[in-house]
Length: 178
Picture: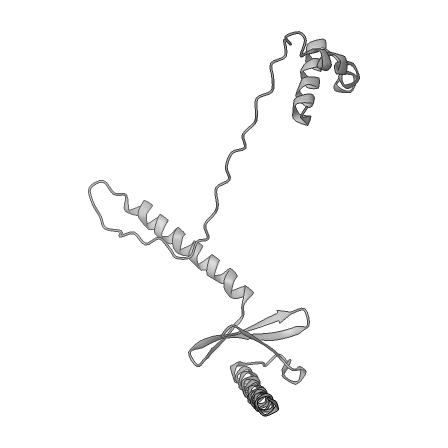
């Protein structure tokens, strides 16, 4: 017994006997059990199919169609379509720009300043760099961002050098102990 089958049976029972759904819940159980013995006048429920939802594609580029006059073309209509697609393109890109404030480019890669849970941070070349409190003011610019990025890159190089020296020494110790 499925829930949908029982529910549809009770609804049909209520409609057939002209009673409320609540009353039909208590009275329909005997009829429901006996329906296998005698053919029921209530048709079995048909499975409902849900319509498929269409996926909306984001508008990335405007639709550019040639606006050349011909015998059957309506120039005003083509121009309106073109302007509307450009407007959609501008709105879409403005939303993206609002999400990631663009500071500029460093080594031909974009630098973004974002606001996070723990304060501002830079997004550069797939890496995230925390902005120190001394730089957190209204006049934060690309030069400050480049200082933070280069400092962190130098720090990472030094850490890697120390790790490599440690690994090299560890490997030498293993060789001499054997």
